[in-house]
Amino acid sequence: MSPQTVVRDDPAIGFEGQIAYPVKTYIDPNSRFVKEAAGIPFGRFVVREGDQTVRLPLATTEIDLTKQTGVTVRQAYQEANANGYKDGDPAAIVYVGYVWMYVEAAAVSDAPVFCRIAAGGHGVGSAMVSGGIQVPGATFDTSTSGAGLVIVRLRGT
Image (cartoon, rainbow, N blue to C red; front, side, top):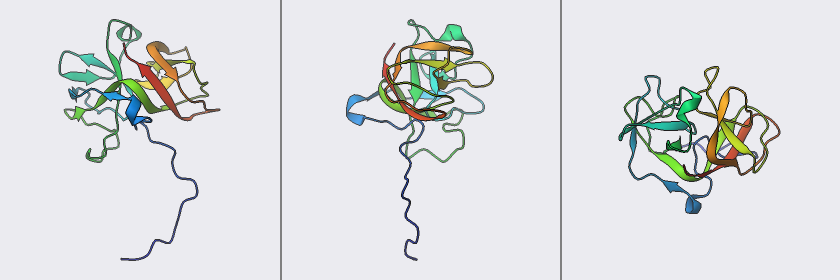
């Protein structure tokens, strides 16, 4: 085994779908199965479809106070997949707590979080109103000056 020759001085602060504060986060113990042919990336908003499955939201009408909206959680044991969870995989979902998400533009702490539906951005967290819908109970816990990772607080729906 060769010795380590490179040490990063700028490690990643988090990854999409990673739990930010484990003690303050509740992961649904009932895994839901992914119902998306292309899979669902980690750290994306999902909606329940029936009792056993989740999928990416397809319309703004699918996210409101009457429907349970959560975020896919990164699992260390999950088989490597560019899309996160593959179709048919059991997915861990967080409905209440703090999770790292990627946003496409600047975000401000305590501002509401929107789920982008338009232009193929299904499930991506956003600070922009256009092309998306506000997720009830979701706010930014941290800020970013441009596209990047932020912590999103979910209060459950």
